[in-house]
Amino acid sequence: MTEIKTQLSTLLNKIEQFKNSVSDQDKTVKLLAVSKTWPAEKLRIAFNAGQFSFGENYLQEALIKISALSDLEIEWHFIGPIQSNKTREIAEHFDWVQSVDRWKIAQRLSKQRPAELAPLNVCLQINIDDEESKSGIAADDTLDFAAKINQLDNLQLRGLMIIPAKTDDPLQQRDSFHRARKLYQQLSILYPSVDTLSMGMSADMQEAIEQGSTMVRIGSALFGQRHTLNKT
Ligand SMILES: *Cc1c(COP(=O)(O)O)cnc(C)c1O
Image 1 (cartoon, rainbow, N blue to C red):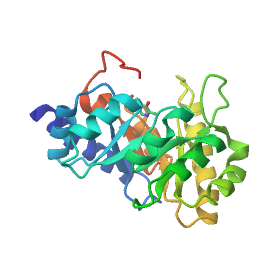
Image 2 (image 1 turned 45 degrees about the vertical axis):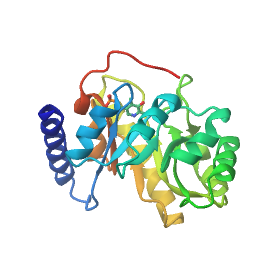
Image 3 (image 1 turned 135 degrees about the horizontal axis):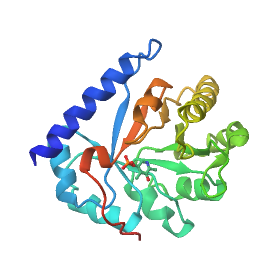
């Protein structure tokens, strides 16, 4: 119990420290707690320690937790691949979707967003290193895709989400983050609603923050090493 609390405050301190090392970074860097594979009780502990936004990758697993924690004011982010038969439940139960990379999916999310809820916050997932195995749209298509997304009534364009290619070369990694940052800047000039550059995970959050991330998605550095993946 105290472990998560300690990990959380260690993480928040690190984020603050990395942020302060960048002279032009005056905005806060938000922490998204990535809770895939961890049971609802762990999330409750983190919530009680002050963490209120959580990211989930697998819909069925997420719905169980959303229901178990419905007494808490949690902000839920969907960050995994989206199949079109899952869009309705995502639109009904989440506050954010960070993995939007197909027009058909975006249209469905907008159409299925319940009228009584605020628009669904979305980030476009960009395949910043053009990896064949990875989801996300090509960097060159970002502005065109954003223009279309911005037309959808029940979606609110908030920014970009990127996962750079795995590499041992710090220069290459920095270059990926830097290109993402440039794209994000172009986008935020065009759309006042854009305020989120979601990049950085447990292993690369320092580099990501130094390159201008506004939201890091952290799993293992907060909850510990994941042992299983309950894919549903
Ligand atoms: C699992 C996951 C994370 C968190 O990864 P850690 O290395 O555990 O911090 C972040 N973003 C996405 C999209 C993920 O799937």
